[in-house]
Image 1 (tube, one colour):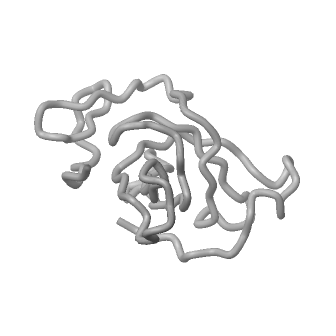
Image 2 (cartoon, rainbow, N blue to C red; image 1 turned 60 degrees about the vertical axis):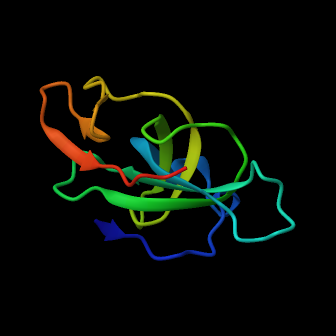
Amino acid sequence: MINCTKSKSSINDFNDDELYEVQGIITKLTRTSSPFDDSNIKVMNYIYHLDYDTPLEGTEDNFDLIFTVGAPIVVVVSKENPKISFFSHYGNIDDRLYDIEAQDTLLLKNGEKLFKFENSK
């Protein structure tokens, strides 16, 4: 995996015409390390640009929606730097429809294995 550098950028720093949407998949959900956070507050890791030989990775901190690993999400990406990305919303915008098989492996519709998820709670 190519790890995206931690950016202090906010989605509010961009105009709509500076971003584009791509398909993403949640790969890991972990509780935040702060003892003062609500137990539903999580850090979400996801992959996007699934069409790349090695998909890019992103992270969303203080994520409080209830999703599961493997859920399809929409990611907005900076046109200038594709390593800057933000979670947009739940959903599948890719016609290839991703499936998860028994061993926590993400499969493309054609059966090609794309990604092996980490076991996470």
